[in-house]
Structure formats: structure tokens, C-alpha cells
Length: 302
Image (cartoon, rainbow, N blue to C red):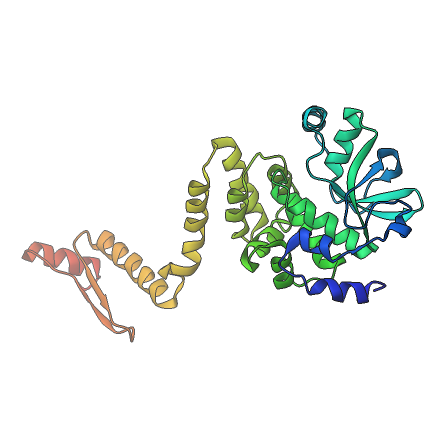
């Protein structure tokens, strides 16, 4: 990878999230920026000199939410500066803060406060993904896709990814497993038709048709997460606990069927006992001489 050196440097900040990555990115000097402000100060940069982050994993921005943020910016201004990297003398690229940048345009601002950092494409990808993951309004499927991209495109293992985004390994694994669900279920999770809890319960089922069947019940019957978990548990238990799958109990079932046939055949109570070695006895009681002769006739003895 072209960024091995810088990537190894960033591996040392695992667990501290986006802030650590941004802090690790080298601050640009005043001469590099072509602006007089000291390096550690916030710089006012023209909005039309900033372009979007091409590594931004999120393509959809809610227009209503942006308009609300723009109204807030008109009144209070930009409270948290964005972070950018320098591309050329008068051109910058976003690292973090695309919603603030877009809303500032809507609000009619000419400039925006920004920290300027030097970052390579690897830094940009990691920062964009991690900033996206830390957003509260991100749905579980978007989080799962971002986790997957961090692993595949940034060469992170699950345990390293967990430290990077501040989640334990089990949580990361559960999100990644969402991507193995059928597309219809993934879309339902993405569109908030079912919750992450519902999807997590469905993950426990390996059969795709069964997953889709329970999914339809969830949507049609408005099943709660607890009810869904109960259904999944009931479906799983027979595979683990059912005694009918063992040879011994299968044989006992067949003996019981034979006993029922004998009772029907002789029209009287019949006792059939069998030991583990398949040895046993059949008892046919009689209640009178006439009853005894009836049984003998059935046996074709007299």
C-alpha cells in the first residue's frame, strides 16, 4: 500500500477515534497555506475554495436537517470549526465537517472557520469513515458498511477496528454480520422498518427462507424484539434438545406404535416392555374364560 508509513503511524492512536486521527495529521505551516495566521490558530477560508471529501462514505444528506442547521448557523455562527487539508495554493478539501460546510453555503456565508491539516488519502478515508460512524443518526446498515470498509480498505482487523471506533469486538462482529442478511431485511433495517434488535435476532438463524419468513411476521404482526427472540429460540431448541433425534428414543417411539396396534387388534389392554438390549415381554390380560377363548381365536390357536 502506498501509505504504509503513514498508516503505521496512525496505528499507534487506536482507540481514540476521529479526534486522535485529526490530531495525528500534521498541521500545515503558515507558508504552506499561504496565509499569515499562526499554525495552531483557526483560519477563515472561503467556502468556494473548499471541495467535498471524495472519501466521504455518506452520499445522502437530509435537506430538512441541513436547512435547520443553516438557520442555526445564521443565528449562532459556526461553533465547531471544520477540518480541511490543503490541495494547492487556494484549494482545500474537507476532512471532517461536511454538514457544517453545506449548511454554511445554504446560510449564505462567504467563509468558514477551519483547521488546516496535511493528510494523505489513507488519512482521509479513515477520518471520513470514523466521523461517519460517530454520527448519532447513522442507521445500523450504514455503520456496518463503514465497518466493512475500514477493515477492507484500511487493513484493520476486527479487534483493531473495535478499538478505533470505541466498540468491543462482539458489537463490531454483530454489525458486520448484518451484511450477511438477505437484501430485503437489510433494506428494512436501513429504512427503520425493523430495529437492530430484530435483525440481531434473525442473524442467529442460518436458513435464509426461515429468516425471511420470520421477517414477514415481524412486519405483518408488529412483533417486538423480545417476541422475535422467543420465536428464534423456539426454532433453535429442537435442533439442540429434542430427544426424538436419538436412535434410542426413535426405537421407543416405534415400540409404542406397535403396542397401540396390539391394543387395537386384541381389543384389550396390552403391555409391551422392552429393555435397552431390545429384550422384553408382551402381556395380554383376560378377564374371563370367554375373553381368554376370544384371544386364542385371534391368535388362531383354537
